[in-house]
Image (cartoon, rainbow, N blue to C red; front, side, top):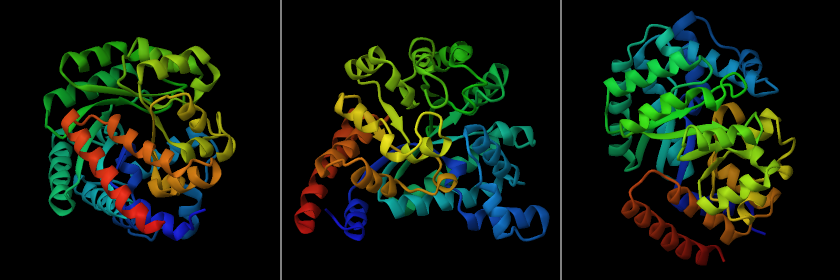
Length: 345
């Protein structure tokens, strides 16, 4: 059994990818306090912070998420979020990141999408210059606000194309916005050479995942944990190697299909040869980092060291990098793993 400090030190040295990460949720408590003071000219108390993060289900979490978005008063506020993202990248030894950005709430506040995109580009380039890490964006068209809003979000993406925006995602309240309602949005995105991913099977049964596959033709499934109820679906996922973006701590917090970490189906999916990747979803909101997640897999679900390495490799396999880039990163994983594993042993 590896001791926790040694495990964290070892994992931090291994290059990793994270594919299911919401940019607004990489925010730090310090940034929340800065934004609150800027908007209200009063301090954000520790009790208020505790209350903000007290929720018991997915809808409660989304309500808290929207509250944080409400603290933004100008586009320059995104600079703070990207600073937090840079710190998160360095703390977790990330080599490549794909993040969701959810513009809907900001657009309703009157923010200019074109100015938001300029800010995204500036900050992503800054992170690349300062860390060497590539960050790509997936714009959440959001099921929470309906199909018409999703179409508008896609229009804005298409009218403000930058290389850093590689595709769209469908996030938000799964019970309020079934995947099947957004088929036309996703078809238009694909017709315009955008990649498509969708949250599904997080708060709704396996039928939601099937719709994400058959109607949305999503290239990856966010969460997908309700697949555990459908043997045919699990076999399909294994046969096609359609990736799942698994976020265990998030799933335990929202408590729809997983009550405790030890019950999470990621180990079963892994053993069934489903292409699973490990992610945090919303680090501050769920009090978890990516290395924390790997530690929990090691201690609570008894993933062996070689299985953890395979999960890390899966992150690059399931990414939207080129085949050449994937191989380069995976070679780096193998080399650093061999080097530091020898030291650990």
